[in-house]
Length: 80
Image (tube, rainbow, N blue to C red; front, top):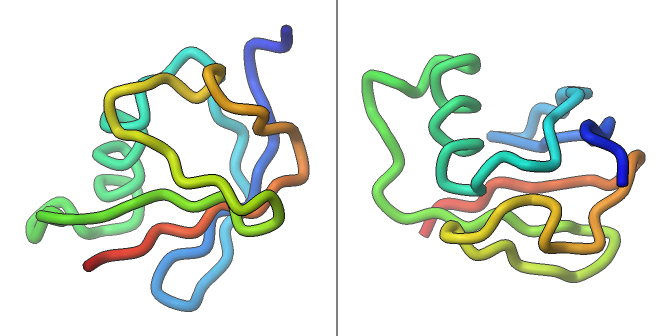
């Protein structure tokens, strides 16, 4: 299995193409994205990551490689 995948993240209506490691925990990934895109001062309290083109919700306690996510997928960060 590849150690990295190229995905598109959609946050707050903006899309960002990123290369992410497959062995990162989903919880850590969202913290890193918040730091990169400026939400670190106001961290998300409730969120979910959804793979739009596959209809998969990601559990924050699992790692990315636990899911059938591949390069080219669109992942959306949803707050609720």
